[in-house]
Each structure stands twice: as structure tokens, then as C-alpha cells.
Length: 468
Ligand code: FRU
Image (cartoon, rainbow, N blue to C red; front, side):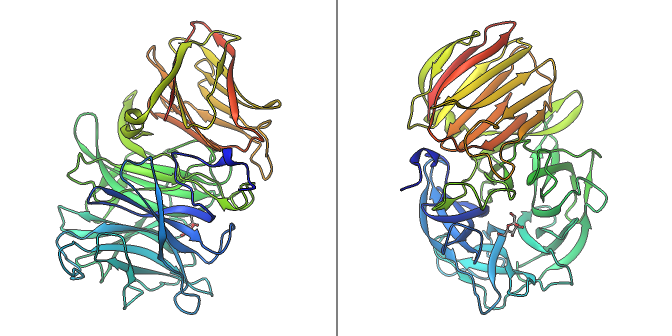
């Protein structure tokens, strides 16, 4: 590669060549995590969108597979975002042989920009795909932005439910067989952030710490993110199979960084610990087409486990790296971070740095690359904020050089932890297991090689540095 190899993540998925955006059709079956994605096989900028395909058994080591769904330039068009479900009871009648059919729901986007909802079917457990002969299954009702259908089985009403983005709101539909869809209603015209168009929704139940069920609605929005460009907001509430009713008014963000977009969750984990695992696209529409990796563009976030937690009575959504990361990591060094301390970062590895911030009122860390390029990370209990400054981090065009500010969503305590995962051109920052999260890409001319402590007011925090 003539592009610097240190920009390529090792434990996050990125395509070998060409353009990638949103994760799609994530489905778990037979021990395999399937990940599909928005992909342009013809180049490294957005266009002629297909569904690419990658698989993993541990969510950390990914293998790229042949394209799963090709665009139809002379037909229904490009293959935009959507989901996939395992149809265990063969409600669709698509089953051939032993395997339950896997059914993908996606948006066809034709040459005139018309968006309709379509199906594709895999009868071999998610490896090979065929488009449904009677596409589309939902025609366009006269709405310009009408896309990204995500489907799940709603057990108590025994129906499939679809949530899709319709401009400034989401629409809900339901079906018995995944083929015939009935419109239920919408949500969002008067809720959440409206600084941009709504995209890539997802809806799923999670348990509260007290063991009650709540429903989480994720909605990505572009632009309008808290630090510019693309970001994902969430709502917590109730869903009875027809209507979503939120339990809060204020806007909430899943991740305050600039680079976690269009994230949705895996199907097929119901009854397997009921894990709810999300992957997002680690880029931002502000600069995605311009980042200097040139021959490939786009990577996914680490898979993250979503969970509900309480902070001062409020019920909030956290997102932390899946436990597979802890299992896979090896201790590289440990010690105490007093002011002036320098920690060497071993090159050529994905890194996982964990810091017990104790009662330190403020911690300021500098991640250095080669000749004076750096990222500045500040966690301030005093100011209630997490900051990442990329202004001197190397390639800083198209708004990538802005300082990123994440108000601490939750309250810190004496056991608070700051965790930083660094892999290639990505930094994922989690405070207290993802109660506050900040994901950002950066493109330094050389790999990050050391960490310097600029300020560690109060206690000297202990750290452990792992390679993954
Ligand atoms: C989100 C998005 C989706 C759309 C896809 C097109 O990033 O704009 O709404 O389906 O990308 O590639």
C-alpha cells in the first residue's frame, strides 16, 4: 500500500480496498457474526452502493467476503442501508432445506432518487443472497427521504415490526410474513434533534437495572451532531407493538465523538444472553469522502454492548466494548500516571489503555506521534467534561481539526475509569464502561508512539496498557 499502513485498524473491520459506510444486515447464526456494509466496489468515494460482507467469530478478527448484494443500475438501483433477521419459524415461506431463511430488508434507491423498501433472501445461513422477485415490498408514499428499514420479531404481538427513517421522523410498519407490510404510525416530528435528516433507526428492548423492560430507539442524524456533522441520538420509552412513547424530552446522544454513525444492532442473539451489540460506521459525512487513506475509506467501531443504567434517577443508555475485547487482550505495561510521566506505546498493535482516575479533579494526556503531532485528551471532573483536541493530530482538513467536547453524561465517582482504545486511525474513549463515550478518527503522519501526562491534579491514577 502506498498509503501509510499505520492508518489501517487491526481489530476493527475495514474493507481491503474501496469505499465503505454504514453497517447493514447484522445477523448472528451458527456461531458466525455476519456484517454487511454500504460498499462501492468501484472506488474509494461514495457511489454505486452495494452490500459488502464480512464475517467474524469473535467480533475482533474480521474476514472480508464477496459482495452480497449488487446494485441494479438499470433497475431498482443502489442497495442502501437496512437490516436482516433470522426467520426461525419460516413465516416468509422462503425456507429451502434445513436452514431457517435469513431475510434482509433494505432500501432500493433508483436513478431518480426514489427510495423503496425491498427484500433479499439467504437460504444457506447468510452466505449467499438473492433478491426477492416481487421487490419492492413497500413502495414510496411520496416521501423524499424514506429509507433504512430495520426489522425485528415482536414476540408478544407475534408480528415482525419495521422501523424506517422518513425525513424528520421514523415510521413503524408490521407484517406476518415479511412480505406484506401494514403502516402503523410515526414518531419523532416533535421529539429529539432536528438539525439534519433522520437515518438508520433501530428499535429493541433492554432490561433496566431493576429488571424491567424498556425500549430503545436509535436514530442517526446528519448533520446536527453535538460536535458537527453526523451522530446518533437515542430515546428510551415504551413500545407496545404499534406505538413508541418516550419517557424523556431532552435530546440524548449515544456517543459524543464525531465518528460513530449509523450504528445498529445484531439480530439473532435473542436467547443467547440477550446481548444487544452495536457497530457504527467510524466516520463522519463532513469528511468521509476526503480522508487520506485514499485506496480504502471507512472502518467500523468496535462492537459495543448496549445497556441501561441509572444516574441520579435518570435511565440512560451506555455502550461499552464487548467482553471479547477483555478476553483477547494481553498486559503490556502498568504503573502510575504522575505529571511528566511518559508511557511508550508499542507500535503495530491495537491498544487498550485503562486508567483508574480515582478522585483526580483533572487529567490531561498527550498522545504523541513522530514529529510533534499529537492528540490531547482531557477528563475534567471539575468542568464535567471530556475533551479530545485533534487540531495538531496530522491531517486536519474538512473540519476534522475541531476540538471535540463531550459533557459527562453521568456523575464520576472514586472508582471511575477512563478507557482508551487505539487502533490504526481510530480512538475510542469510554468513561466508566461507556456511560460517556467519544469516538474519533485521526490521521497522524506516523503512528502514535508515546503517551505523556501533562496534568494529573490530585491523586496519581494507576494505568494498565494492553495490546489486543
Ligand atoms: C447513512 C446513509 C443512509 C443510506 C446510506 C447510503 O449514512 O445516508 O441513510 O441508506 O447512508 O449509503
